[in-house]
Image (tube, rainbow, N blue to C red):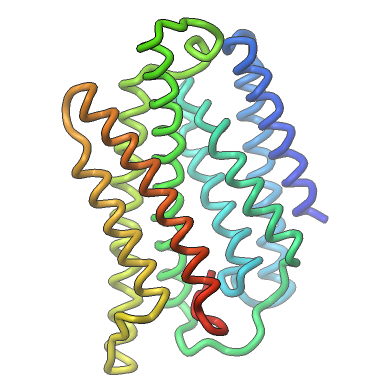
Length: 269
């Protein structure tokens, strides 16, 4: 039930952000949207806390619980922009991602995982949390990049209308994108290192052909590539934003392909 409340709040926030966009950011609609989205994040956290108490396990295993947790991490990424003023408007891109993931999780049913994993306990929880935080950082960078490209095209075409007034400045969006990528890369690197260290320590082996390893390395490569593409000057910033959008798309599509190709439980997500 709490999951539905969170979804309703997320959808309400998105509706207000769209209305704010259409009005050119006038009034307090954008601020209200952020507040409702924040309430959705807290309701979402309460739902997953309830899951943990009821089932005695963290919602980190299985497609539905993991999707819901990842959606919460992305929502938390939005809350992290609370002190950045109009940058909070990246929620107009972030919240649809949250709605999609949480909606799919609810449709599948957020239930405890079946079976017992070899890799579990504190190591596993930290590994997955760091990996999710890394993906959350990429989602924030992706949202900033989408708005950057939109604002750039608006300025280039000299269409200084509602969208121009709603969107944050290019420099602000570029800075947020860079922060998201750097923070996400650090978290993902630590998460991957922890998982691989456990594998080598307790299994005395490393399986580079494992779908989860492939996806992790691909995601890490996308992070690095997007950061390398960035530099000083508007052209480099635009190129970095474009690389972030393309990279995020590649990561999502590759996950779906590898997930469908993997037999049984190749992924914790």
